[in-house]
Length: 121
Image 1 (cartoon, rainbow, N blue to C red):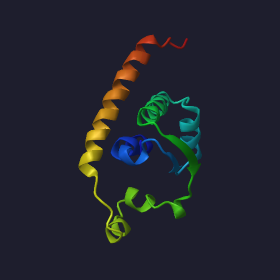
Image 2: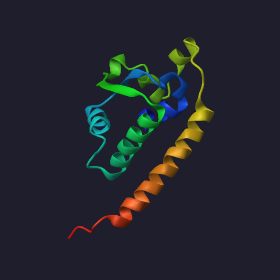
Image 3: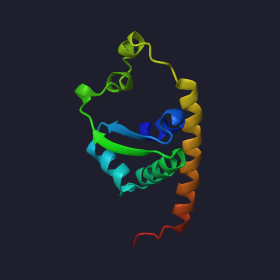
Image 4: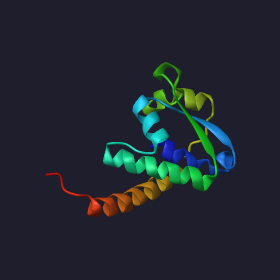
């Protein structure tokens, strides 16, 4: 989800550039690289990621980063002390708007695809 949020939040920075995106697990990395997943919800997120990447006109290199080296690990666990010390800009409100847009897109895709899905027998 963070990969999906990064593009709309910082599209002016990413637009028409090649960039690196570090994720914290192999499953996420490979789902975004393949633009698909066996998990239906992750599959839709990977598809939206590809669409947003194209819309922003960027090309992203995906790599895994360990928790020890991941600057986002502490904030994801509620510890924002380093972020505050480094004077990072709080994008909570913008993130909420982007998340709402992404969820709406996911609902639309899941609804369309769920209607076409064949029941497993």
